[in-house]
Image 1 (cartoon, rainbow, N blue to C red):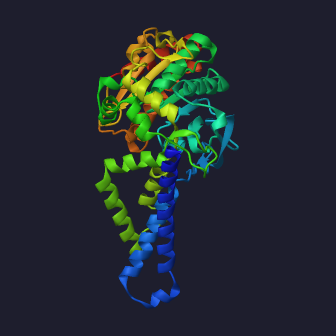
Image 2 (image 1 turned 45 degrees about the vertical axis):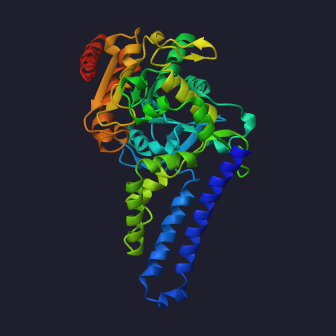
Image 3 (image 1 turned 45 degrees about the horizontal axis):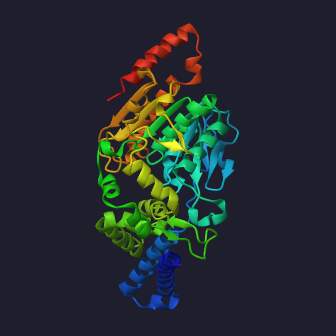
Length: 435
């Protein structure tokens, strides 16, 4: 009950601040107060509007906001997210483009379960939809999952990916972003041993902690400093009575958000001060840069406690993936079993979360994979988010990833002799991307 009380206390604080913001905004908007030409009233209304929106977004799951895409025919086609495979802790979602022929590239985008919703990859999805069939792992908020659904740790996460890949079939190209990179590598190795026909064609790992010790950061240092007992006692709580997951042990999203904000407290404080000024001056809009960013940034989700704790212990502390010692249900997952899945790693030179060296370590673990099926890319000047969103992703990284996918597609593998020589040239290009 003590941990449940802490959870409810955080929700009470959030709810109270949302109410205070709404109250200030409403009171300062009374028509009668317009007779008083005092700037303090405008500031009160602006503070209320910004405060209400900020604290309201903390419990709202953002919408994908991808309504249409322009096809090669020059027409706009409606985009509709559809659940292909539904499971208690996460769904496999397909972005169906109405009235368009099926695209040859089938891509599974593995989203992180690290505090934010899969919609964090919205811009990544939008950049791939025009010429790809895009599928995404849409993880659920643990607070909404009844205790009766059972546990969910990194082994369960890996088996979910296995089920998703079996559902999609062997002509799939996987892109794993950040946190799921090591577990996606493990899921591919699991299939290599247990169900080779279900393996994907290619696997692209973007900014993931395959070997956290290869290039220490503040994230890895934190995992090394604290004990598992300290983490379990200080970071894990039980969901309160407001949600369906009442009693489930979680790493609360609000607790994660407080940590995120504390890392750059001055920057966030200034951003909100500036936004209040813009609202008071009539310069803000519903979809301005501040709101677009913070509507997503503030929308956090609870993680199952066992997933959070097992990630810290087995991925960061024990480095089971890096040591090729990972097990699922007592069975060793040998990464060396991967022999015919082309693997590419992508890192950002300025990434301070998964520093350069952590992700490319995956290639050394692929002892059974020919060198011509391995590739890597280091993007100069890119931070953690820049390697999967923004201009560097769209203009530099995305074309390289799609070229890698095309060079290792089924069509390339089964091409006629002339086409094979062309593929050989493409392979050289891919290999030359290695840093």
